[in-house]
Amino acid sequence: MLIRIGASALALAAFAGLAGCSGGGGDSGPRDVTQRDFDESFERVVDRGPTLDLPASGRADFAGGTRVAMSDAADRPAGEILADVDMSINFDPAVSDPISAEVSNIRSVTPAGTERIAGTLRSDPDVVQSELIRETEVVDGPDGPVALTSGGIAVATVGELEIDGRSARTAAVFGGVFAGEGASGVAGDTLVYVADDEGNELYSGEGAFYLDRE
Image 1 (spheres, rainbow, N blue to C red):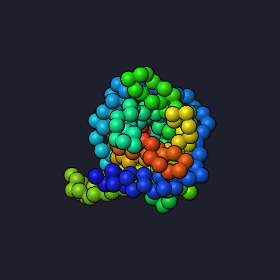
Image 2: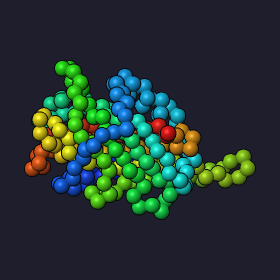
Image 3: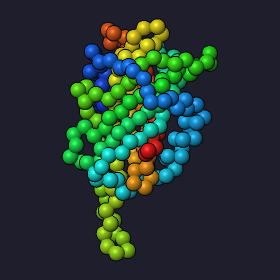
């Protein structure tokens, strides 16, 4: 899948560039999405079908969430991560870094319960630039050729989170496709990598995310 390949490449670049990055601060109001809420919202966005009229200009804000199944360095299950995701996307093809993103209200969900994780992840073009992927196909329409434009995104967020009582360098990378008329949503894959200050892997995970256009 094109978007997944792009997200994997961004994940490696983001993780390599984490040294010296920090995250923190508050958010504009937690959504506290549950696992069930997330699944329903994700399917709702996916069911809109792929966008075929991707805008060629303008900027839009998107809000949603992510759900990620985590494993420790020994590949043992380590619960799930739920978090809020907010992005601002510039649709102008000439813009070199079109997406700003933030991951906040991060929660660890295990059989023992739900625990909030201190810290916020943010996109940083000095670490790795975001990508807006655009594909146009010309098809025959009733009145002549019609251009159908679809697309997707790949963006990395990085920062320091408080995990297991210590600061952990973290990268969360998103790769997804636009859904619905006029790019009313985005849905796709999430990759997460967590390391200590020396770069040793602590946790990693794979999951999904969704966004609704505000």
